[in-house]
Picture (tube, rainbow, N blue to C red):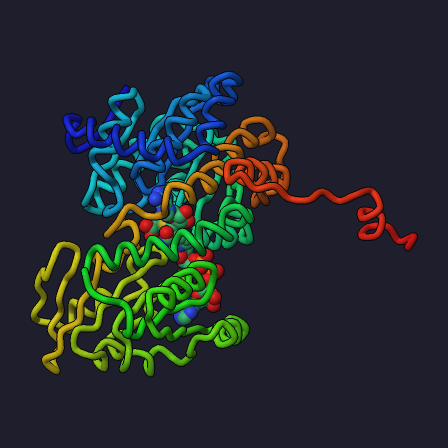
Length: 415
Ligand code: NAD
Ligand code: SAH
């Protein structure tokens, strides 16, 4: 066993967090039970890079219960929880991650994971895949395939596949219905406001929330902003999404106009420089900015740091910046995913579904990976359905079943 974590003595607190997750993740619990009987991962080494907090830790334990040798790192320098990492090491898993890692440490931890010649890659945003295709190509031969958790990661994989540069099959977990319909929308919707609220301790009602991007995540963030009493402005580049936002009851305008009136700004586009220095210069004194999309590039943090000679830590996870016009604007969690840098990310019941898809897709790859000809793999419909059926059962909800007559009516050309 090997590891590189902050402090093994933090394990007890991490164990309590993981136990709480286990109690609230019935889907993963049922898979843990199945896997420990079937041992689908016996002899398989799994590399995993996902936000290293308690839900991810429980996924790792479920895969380990199925016989996997786990090599684990985080997927963002600010989302690793050191007590959770310690708890995983205490249970015998290999972990390389700590909170606040420098870029050099972050990359070293990814390298340490991949040095173990892993067979299955579970990635969130493409860091493992990227390293395997650049400086660690000698480890490619061990890989059967992998799974990608998030929208931006899949966009990157699609670009690699198009240029014929992707060397092994990757399952697009994010695109499963049981993932993005719930995780991106309801998960991001709730956890973004949880992160903002616990960090700022300010009222949302009566304020103006500007949501950049009206994709699956943006819809959730806007919906929950409205529920908290905010007036919501959406910014978009896609005319269809913009109409959707208007019909959902939100105002739509370019960012530079919204910049003048917003109180809270949340970027969730996967794009870069969605809020520019020119936008920040016209913001109101006290404006609060945060990001929920990939990486820390949606708000031009480098530009902001350069244009402000005065910056200061106002509260934990809140940096204040004084502009040349004398106004102060505030950025949460260094412009990284606010729900994970300033909170615990999505709720357990949401990650239960996302991670059930991950676990079932990992099993699918072990069983079928070598037969796959395509590089970008759609989550098999039976996996999506299995998760939905199990989830509905745990929610104690029942649905109707088509009668033979109805099936004929719907699907036969005879009528
Ligand atoms: P999506 O593709 O459904 O939506 C993105 C939207 O942003 C699109 O409608 C697009 O038109 C719009 N957009 C792109 N560039 C823009 C710009 N410059 N200005 C305004 N709008 C712009 O993607 P999604 O599933 O909503 O994911 C969005 C981002 O959030 C991705 O980076 C994804 O990886 C990340 N994500 C984060 C979490 C989290 O926990 N914080 C959860 C899921 C996904
Ligand atoms: N490395 C990138 C990853 C984007 S993260 C970055 O840090 O910018 C977006 C993913 O985080 C989502 O697809 C979601 O499934 C996942 N996520 C959200 N809450 C989580 C949680 N509590 N635990 C683990 N993953 C979580």
